[in-house]
Amino acid sequence: MSINQVHLLGRCGQDPEIRTVGQNNILKATFSLCTGGKYKTQDGREMDDTAWHNIVAWRGLASLAQQYIRKGGQLFVIGHLSYRKYTDSNGVERNITEIVADKIELCGSRTDAAQPVPNEPRTPKSLGDPLPDDIGDLPPSDGMPF
Image (cartoon, rainbow, N blue to C red; front, side, top):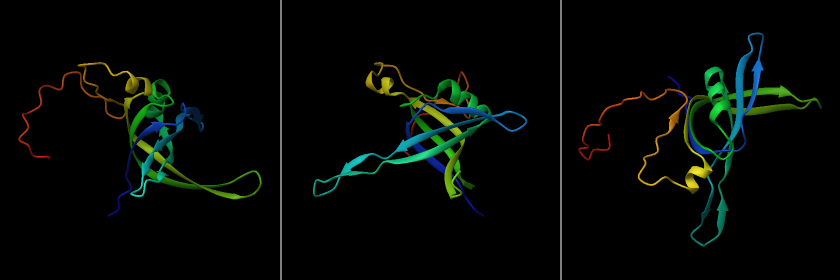
């Protein structure tokens, strides 16, 4: 058995780059996602723990990324790691690590975060599995976390 799954929550670094690939013109979206941030150590030094991830979305997810994902928007991405090699124009072999998205949820944009709407719950839009229009009432919580 093996597992290759990644869960990331972060902000989009730029609008997705959209292109078609192959003879069948399969839609592909690529964008970067920033996770982490700054924190202070016990002795008061500020440390930068920012990481940038290359995200790839195909077909329907690419189409929805093209429509809805924008720079600065907060995203939750579930996907898997992919590694590939290529030779650049100078003949140097390059290695690339990417996250191939299996599901993307829109969690809000910077403008949403700056100006929250009072008394209105924010629900993320799922680009992988849309929520049904009527999900009904949730059962009462018994205090158990699962």
